[in-house]
Length: 383
Image 1: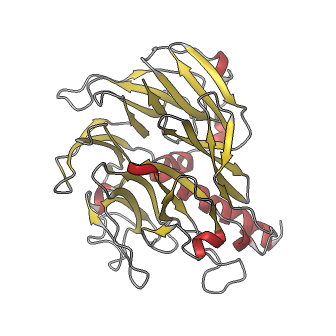
Image 2: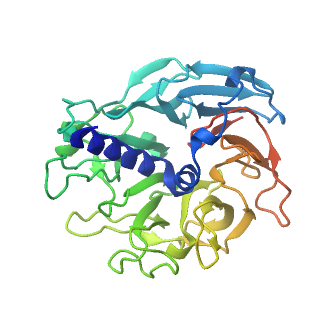
C-alpha cells in the first residue's frame, strides 16, 4: 500500500471515529470484528422481542429502517452509507449519507424514506493527496425556528500541508433549514455561523442538542492529559488519550478556544447527550474507571436531572453498567429510554429499553431487537 493510500485510509478512520463518539469507538477498538459471525438476519426479517409504542427509526449497515410494533420496514437499502437519522417535525427525517472514504452529505427524507432534498454539497475534486477538497458533515439537529445545527470539518488541511495535514476536526455550525450548505457558503458566512472551535487533532465538537430557550448542549473532545485543554487531567490516562466533556453554549471566538460551560467533568468522559421533551432530564454515555484507569471496553448509560436556566446537572446516576452502552434516546413522553448495546457473546449493537429511566430504582433493561448491526447513531422514537 502506498504512503498516500495509507494516509487516506487513516484519515478516513479518524473522521469516522470522531463521527460516532467515544463509547462506540472504544467498543469497536476493543475487539476484532472478524471474531463475530455476520448478522444472520436482515432487519426486515429479524425478531423483535419487545414491541414498543410508536415508531422507531434507525440506521443499520448503511441502510435506514422503521420499526412499528414487531414490524420493521426498509426505508433505504443497506450498503448505501445512510446514518444518523433525526426527526424533522411535521416533515419526516434528516439523515446523513456517507460516500465511503471521501465525504458525507445531509438529506431531507419523507416518513417513508424517499429523498426530498439534498441540503449539503460536500464533494470536491478527490485525489489521494488533495483530501482538503472534500468535507464531512455529521450530527444534524433541528432547533426552534427551523434552526439547523450540524458538525462540520472545515477548515482543514490537505495531506501535504505540513501544519494541518491531518486536521479533520469537527466544529459546530448553525444555519436555517433550506439554506444550502456548501464550502463556499461556510467560508463566506453566507447564512452559516460557526458556533464552536474544535481542539485540533481530537475529533473536535459534536452532538449539538438545541435548547428550547436558545443555546446548545454539545460534546467537546479534549486531550486527557493536556493542561491547556482539560481543567483537570484524567487519572490513569496516557499520552494521546482523549476524553469527551458535555458543555453548554459555546462562545464563538476565532482567536481562542471558544469553550462553553462544562456540565460534566473530564474524568467522567461523557458523550452522546439526549434530552427528554421537557428538557429536565439528560441521558448520556460515560466511561467508568476500571483498575484506576478509564475503561476501553465499557461505557455506562447515565441519567441526570438538568436545569436549563442555571445550566447545571444533578448527580450522575449510572443506570446501566457492565456493557458498552451507546446512543440513548428518550420516549416522546420523556420517561423511558432506548439505547444501543451488544447482547452477550455478540459484537453487534441491538436496541434495549429502560422503563421509567429517571426514577429510582430503575427497572432492569430489556432487549428489543436481535440480529441487527446498528451503527451507533441514535435511533429516532416518534409517537
